[in-house]
Length: 615
Image 1 (cartoon, helix red, strand yellow):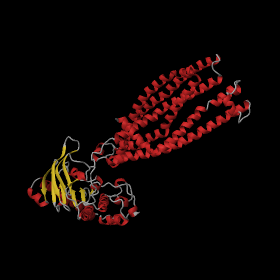
Image 2: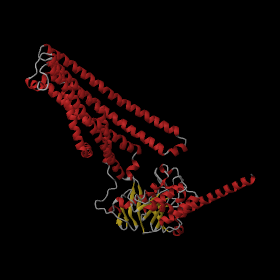
Image 3: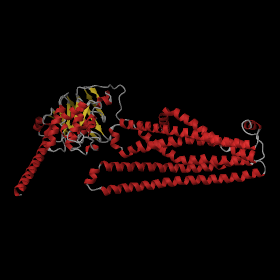
Image 4: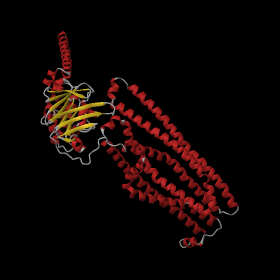
């Protein structure tokens, strides 16, 4: 089954370029025929110019029709043939290389796009477990290995096999007994090649896995560089990389050692075969059963025959790398999306915004339930909030609405229709997000805002920025909306990042808005600006808020209190306080924290005033 999938993938990728590869194959066959003809001018010179033998009548009629009827004419003919054969072979070799390189580049592009497209379609549950560095390695290094195989080994193997068959056929025509003796070493040769190839392939697989681990380690350390520096762990990270690299070196040296054994093993066996042929061939010449020209051409063919054997053994490295790379690519390609799309799903243009959860149960690992029997209904345009202790399931609920995950059982309805009956893209177009940690790209500010609406105009972008209270700080930047911001928005403050995220949500203009602790980590001034922008964003939309500061959701139409994956309370702010349960407890704790914070700030302010007076 695995081989069948691999074969189908190869066929699918190569099929669009079969014409190019067919022309390249034709060129490589012609080049091979030219190479097969290379020894014959030497035989003509030795037997019919230097020696006393006469040209066969069929050849003499052809040669003497264009050249002098003497040995000089025969020599000139031999030189002409040698030059023509070399020119034809060189030209065809150039055509083959040009076409295979071109095909290899386009095959690399198609394969990379196919793999990347498949990755983009996979559900978040896959990425929760996958290592980023390993995925990067598969999209880059593994694709390059396949391209290298197509460029340098695919047709190379074809021509070498063609040459072997052709030379064995010609040698058998000259003397089949002699050919059998020359081929007597072949079983030993292929046994050694097969034995070493298996070890090389296994070692190469280990090397590739370790390379992926190193990329993952580096990617993780660089993406977390602020944490690394905050805890002064630079030396620790360097040491981690050194250990992984040393292990990679050990595995690479083992693989290289196996590869290094292959070439001399082949050379020794070929040398043995050459000695046997020389011993037997010299005896035939001495007994006048073989001409000197026949022996020389036989030895030349023998040498040429061993060359493709040697080349095939060298191609084992490229082939094994490509095979391992293809296995790793197929490993990703055969992973099915855990959020399958219903074949009869409809594309919805715009929903009203009613959301209903019916008997929802959910688990990330199939072992422990994260949500248990969740039921609620949100009317269009309502402002609702989810609160509760850390790990109670708040973020999981908002992840289920756009189908980032599917529940184990139960139904999620939007406008009284199961979310599974909508196409995934059209469903997600109904939702805008403003998250606690808004991800911004290393790109111009306008491009980050327009990410929510790719076809947005300049006026749309400026309007969204204005409504999000972002215009003020954008226009102070050196290039305004064209200013490039750092990866993840590290060159901006928390408040500025949140305002850009709000602008991105505004420009999307989706009927459902999800806010995941959008004011967490902001100072009082930034929070006020962000809340003002959020108030404009929430107008006329079904808004779901995951709240950390309960003071920000006092005006919510309904508040759902979660604990250990269950909704334990619901109601307005006043109704929940009157119940005197978990919400009241959370609210009182937060009030105490805010009072302590105010007291601390007051003391800090008094101390500063006293310092000024003293001075």
